[in-house]
Length: 451
Image 1 (cartoon, helix red, strand yellow):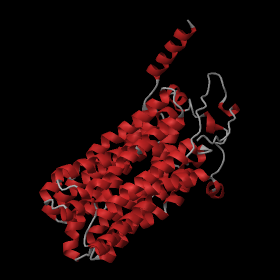
Image 2 (cartoon, helix red, strand yellow; image 1 turned 135 degrees about the vertical axis):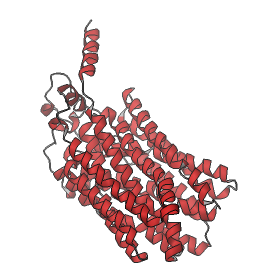
Image 3 (cartoon, helix red, strand yellow; image 1 turned 90 degrees about the vertical axis):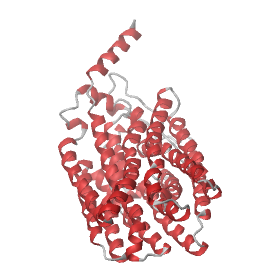
């Protein structure tokens, strides 16, 4: 009888519960979509720009990498700023900044000016992923964080996918410069919506008591430390910070190929026409949208089934990264149809791991006040990989006569190294739920080192 009563109470509470957290994560996804549309525009426009500026492969690698120089550097202060001022303030400032620098690319006169504008873009986009991670940690219970992370991370694939037909079409019909003006203007519209919609859950007029209680229902393990200010000295001494950072370094060494050299690989090395590229080039990113969400669903379902957080988060990560290593077969197949299958599977598997990875800062953080800073360190690792990869590929292409064999095999090895780091180095805290009638301030737990 008691079980039926509790079950009925839960159903009634669910019926009364508001659902504002899903609207919030939708805005986060849209912000990331715009960010990736802006950053991927150069890789799509580069074949058109290189004809005008006469850019060699080695210099193209520098151009493609330049965004990541400032993007990586500003990850660390952006995480601190998000913990101090919150995503309501920092996120729209960042979007406004990067939208302006994107549009300025339209007035570039050569390689130097393009690099300057990309450096400005990198500064503006640095807070985007730490901000989204921070939003999810504040707005979602632990049992929903991987799925929620997959929803905002869809923006990565959507933006990358949109960049190919959108930038190609604008470049063909109006010139590559107009592509940067159009996509730069889109971010300014997002700012208006974000300022109107976003508040902290406890201050939001559309969040009722049932949703607020649900959001906080399994966050007890961090409540006691909620007042702690993030100190970088402590973070640098935490080996989990280094584990998250290096895991992402090696993951991004592989993933950066799709953000940078992928269009040039298909057009120049594999003989795709611009029309063929426009039709099938977006396939890996489009399929990646679904696989990102699937990865989040699988991880949260595993957690809900009673498996430990250590298993529920790591299995999708390791499985996705190991399968993504199939990219290493790409240079050894002659059929472009088979090539697209391999690249699509690799990209989809890479995306499948993403949601669980993005949930990790909240899973290993000692305090909710440090989630933004920890996410900043993690994304700093991501951008180190993104920075190194395009330059290294450009240099390799210059000295190998345009062969992609070495870069793609190395990308496969990087996926396997990343899987090993997440499997053996990262440690995730167990769930400590808040029971009915328990004051969260009375909960005391240690930071567990689960292997």
